[in-house]
Image 1: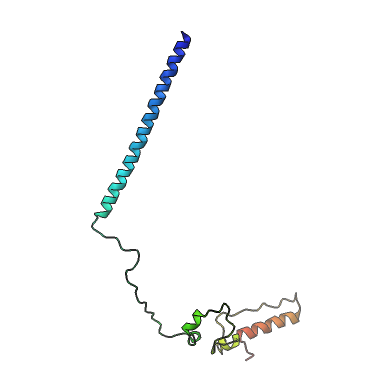
Image 2: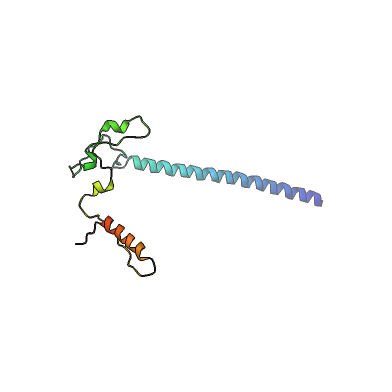
Length: 144
């Protein structure tokens, strides 16, 4: 009799388990259907709205006008054909481009002044003087 009771309990538990699995599958499908319905409603509301969204890209290319009409001096000798040269490395310099740093600076002072250290007596006076002279040359200092 106990074996018969255990068998009926096992059958009842299996039946409940199958019922729970079916109910779980039904709830998952209902959830998916609800989500799809929301997406469709959102898509319908977006497409029937009165305002139209701006396109991401312009349909026609626009011309760009710059306020500054002067061309810099280093661009005066630029040739568009040179940009498409098939050579991998450029071995010649374009004419009119200054070769040394001193030619580009001219007579004006540099925009950023380098400040030399103050002599505190811990190092050599000759080293300090050499550094000071280098800074004087970079900053274009004169004795006047």
